[in-house]
Length: 102
Image (cartoon, rainbow, N blue to C red; front, side, top):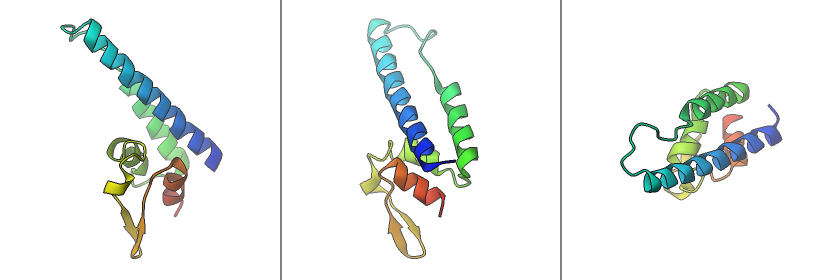
């Protein structure tokens, strides 16, 4: 998979994730007691991440780590990856791509 397409895909996932979060927050305000018809896009998002992982060869689940643990790189200062006594911080989709391709 080309690096540009990978970065574009991660940015699209982030955009959708942010949109879904806003929708979920809005529904909780306008329908505070509705626990049945909640907005959930996780099935599609999980499958997209799975396909992306397969295409780029992410055998260590770095994409999940970047999205969920690092909050799309926002928390990069709190977590580091160490390979061959070198520290790596994953703060951008490009950093993520480079880590996966090591």
